[in-house]
Image 1 (spheres, rainbow, N blue to C red):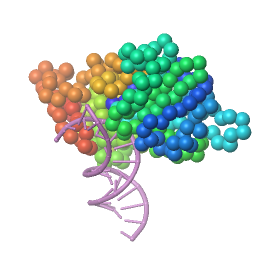
Image 2: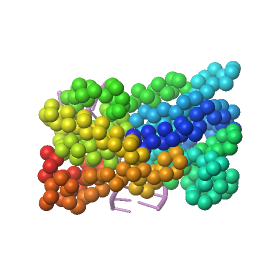
Image 3: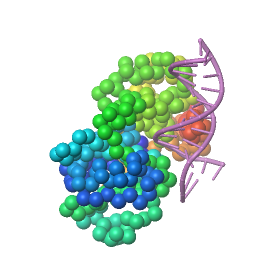
Image 4: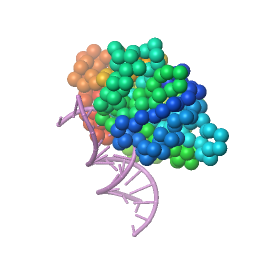
Length: 291
DNA sequence: CCTTGTGTTCTCCG
DNA sequence: CCGGAGAACACAAG
């Protein structure tokens, strides 16, 4: 499940590969992953260069360099949903372990929906088995509208303890649902929400505006600590997630509660991790040490 | 049946 | 009755 650390890892990897590269052609296999009309999507991209690669929450933003005479600045947005992948293959890489990137058959794979071919050899593939993810071309105004929906960037300088505290002050919802809501804090998904609350020793059921100042501080610090550690470990891989090079992350080895329902708590010798459902999401926590 | 990120729709409350 | 908050649901496929 790509959350902030996974998207950040992909962003960094892709920037190394495709910054300033010229897109020669774009092939769209399955139109359901494209939010624009196919022809408009292709026209906005082919013949253009990638100006920058940015991330906001779980969304990737590629600036498409304007050509002389073009009226509008375009941006390519990519959301990976649950199972989306963005993988780059150059001449020195092999595709899906064995095939050469030159082998056309290798990217007519059934879950590979968009292929970007770059000048001087190299392809970027957008694949998504469940097709919850999508790509979209927007102009400056469209980008602004999209960005308006995002809350604080948890590893950014605006995410201060006072800012986080004022966010929780009047919220009647439970703290886990709040952490998952991208309008408040952007980039946290189910895995890191559970890990953050375990680290902070706060129960996911607690109502946000009932939390004590010390508890809020603990959650705030846990958000930064857990996300930074996960970025340093190149994300968490269970099944689908891979980085821009097709490599797995390693943070799954460091998870303390997510997916451990029924197993022993790593902090309490004789307590078991509970598994409940909050906001429609599976939630693991220790009733002994998370109050 | 389970899994989850996101977008939409429904419901509740003041 | 309006607006907003929060919850519930829909989606897809393994």
